[in-house]
Image (tube, rainbow, N blue to C red):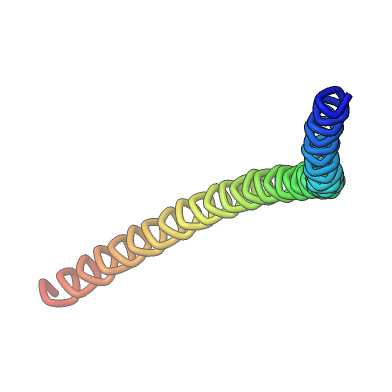
Length: 131
């Protein structure tokens, strides 16, 4: 009987050791579960940061598109101003050319008149000299 008691005692000790191992294993599992929970929370925070960053990038890209549209409208406005300015300059040059042509014609006419008058004066002087 003593032997049976010793066997039971040794079985109880072994069971007690196994329970101790189970308890320490359970503590490790709880510790690992806490660490896992912390990691999951970190992942959730990172995910939220990524979503916020993505929203910010979308907003920035929309602002860039709006800015680009403004630049394009300004560019088109500048093109129209250049076209208008070129048209005005062309008209001005045309009028200047006409005015210069008219002035040159008037000057040539005046020179011809002067030569004719000089010729008449010379003829009169020659007639007077011949007399």
